[in-house]
Image (cartoon, rainbow, N blue to C red; front, side):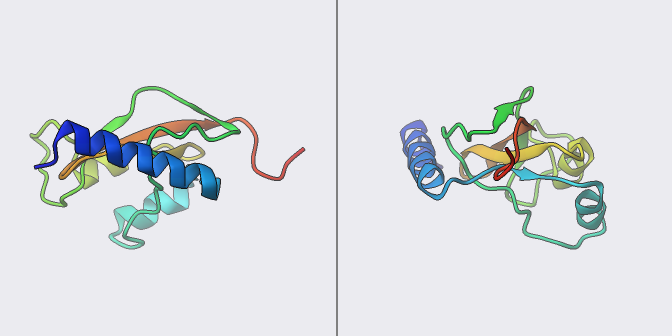
Length: 118
Protein backbone atom coordinates (compact mmCIF):
# COMPACT_ATOMS: atom_id res chain seq x y z
CA UNK A 1 0.00 0.00 0.00
CA UNK A 2 1.25 3.50 -0.82
CA UNK A 3 1.64 5.95 2.04
CA UNK A 4 0.13 9.43 1.88
CA UNK A 5 3.66 10.84 1.57
CA UNK A 6 4.35 8.61 -1.44
CA UNK A 7 1.10 9.70 -3.09
CA UNK A 8 1.84 13.38 -2.42
CA UNK A 9 5.38 13.01 -3.81
CA UNK A 10 4.04 11.29 -6.94
CA UNK A 11 1.46 14.07 -7.42
CA UNK A 12 4.17 16.75 -7.18
CA UNK A 13 6.42 14.85 -9.61
CA UNK A 14 3.51 14.46 -12.05
CA UNK A 15 2.83 18.20 -11.83
CA UNK A 16 6.44 19.04 -12.69
CA UNK A 17 6.40 16.73 -15.73
CA UNK A 18 2.98 17.97 -16.84
CA UNK A 19 4.12 21.61 -16.59
CA UNK A 20 7.31 20.95 -18.58
CA UNK A 21 5.38 19.02 -21.24
CA UNK A 22 2.44 21.47 -21.15
CA UNK A 23 0.10 18.50 -20.71
CA UNK A 24 -3.60 19.15 -21.06
CA UNK A 25 -6.66 17.19 -19.93
CA UNK A 26 -8.05 14.80 -22.53
CA UNK A 27 -11.32 16.22 -23.88
CA UNK A 28 -13.79 13.42 -24.47
CA UNK A 29 -16.21 13.05 -27.34
CA UNK A 30 -19.36 10.97 -27.47
CA UNK A 31 -17.53 8.68 -29.92
CA UNK A 32 -14.68 8.15 -27.40
CA UNK A 33 -17.14 7.18 -24.68
CA UNK A 34 -19.06 4.83 -26.99
CA UNK A 35 -15.81 3.17 -28.10
CA UNK A 36 -14.73 2.60 -24.49
CA UNK A 37 -18.16 1.25 -23.53
CA UNK A 38 -17.77 -1.27 -26.37
CA UNK A 39 -14.52 -2.49 -24.80
CA UNK A 40 -12.14 -0.84 -27.25
CA UNK A 41 -9.62 1.99 -26.95
CA UNK A 42 -7.98 0.93 -23.71
CA UNK A 43 -5.96 2.04 -21.85
CA UNK A 44 -7.84 5.29 -21.37
CA UNK A 45 -5.94 8.38 -22.53
CA UNK A 46 -6.34 10.54 -19.43
CA UNK A 47 -3.05 12.18 -18.42
CA UNK A 48 -1.71 12.42 -14.88
CA UNK A 49 -1.44 16.11 -14.01
CA UNK A 50 -0.96 15.84 -10.26
CA UNK A 51 -1.14 19.37 -8.84
CA UNK A 52 -0.52 21.07 -12.20
CA UNK A 53 -3.11 23.70 -13.19
CA UNK A 54 -3.18 23.65 -17.01
CA UNK A 55 -3.76 27.01 -18.71
CA UNK A 56 -6.97 27.21 -20.71
CA UNK A 57 -8.82 24.84 -18.37
CA UNK A 58 -10.55 25.08 -15.02
CA UNK A 59 -11.64 22.33 -12.69
CA UNK A 60 -15.33 21.66 -13.18
CA UNK A 61 -16.93 19.99 -10.19
CA UNK A 62 -15.85 17.20 -7.93
CA UNK A 63 -13.36 14.59 -9.13
CA UNK A 64 -14.49 11.05 -9.84
CA UNK A 65 -13.03 8.57 -7.34
CA UNK A 66 -12.24 5.60 -9.57
CA UNK A 67 -10.86 2.09 -9.24
CA UNK A 68 -7.67 1.63 -11.25
CA UNK A 69 -7.14 -2.07 -10.59
CA UNK A 70 -9.82 -3.18 -13.05
CA UNK A 71 -11.29 -5.43 -10.38
CA UNK A 72 -13.60 -2.91 -8.70
CA UNK A 73 -17.29 -3.69 -8.40
CA UNK A 74 -20.32 -1.43 -8.40
CA UNK A 75 -20.86 -1.77 -4.63
CA UNK A 76 -17.48 -0.25 -3.68
CA UNK A 77 -16.75 3.43 -2.91
CA UNK A 78 -14.48 3.80 -5.97
CA UNK A 79 -16.31 3.77 -9.30
CA UNK A 80 -15.88 0.67 -11.42
CA UNK A 81 -14.81 1.13 -15.05
CA UNK A 82 -18.43 0.87 -16.22
CA UNK A 83 -19.61 3.39 -13.62
CA UNK A 84 -16.82 5.78 -14.55
CA UNK A 85 -17.60 5.52 -18.27
CA UNK A 86 -21.26 6.28 -17.52
CA UNK A 87 -20.22 9.39 -15.57
CA UNK A 88 -18.08 10.87 -18.38
CA UNK A 89 -19.51 13.82 -20.30
CA UNK A 90 -18.67 14.64 -23.93
CA UNK A 91 -16.84 17.94 -24.37
CA UNK A 92 -15.36 17.76 -20.87
CA UNK A 93 -11.64 17.39 -20.26
CA UNK A 94 -10.44 14.76 -17.80
CA UNK A 95 -7.10 14.18 -16.08
CA UNK A 96 -5.87 12.32 -13.04
CA UNK A 97 -4.92 14.62 -10.19
CA UNK A 98 -4.03 11.95 -7.64
CA UNK A 99 -3.20 8.29 -8.12
CA UNK A 100 -2.82 5.74 -5.35
CA UNK A 101 -2.08 2.04 -5.56
CA UNK A 102 -5.61 0.95 -6.53
CA UNK A 103 -7.70 4.13 -6.79
CA UNK A 104 -7.36 7.56 -8.36
CA UNK A 105 -9.11 10.89 -8.66
CA UNK A 106 -10.18 11.74 -12.21
CA UNK A 107 -10.87 15.48 -12.32
CA UNK A 108 -13.28 16.96 -14.87
CA UNK A 109 -12.15 20.21 -16.52
CA UNK A 110 -14.02 22.87 -18.42
CA UNK A 111 -12.25 24.01 -21.58
CA UNK A 112 -11.71 27.78 -21.45
CA UNK A 113 -9.44 28.15 -24.47
CA UNK A 114 -8.08 25.49 -26.78
CA UNK A 115 -4.33 25.47 -27.33
CA UNK A 116 -3.36 27.52 -30.34
CA UNK A 117 -6.63 29.50 -30.50
CA UNK A 118 -6.52 33.28 -30.25
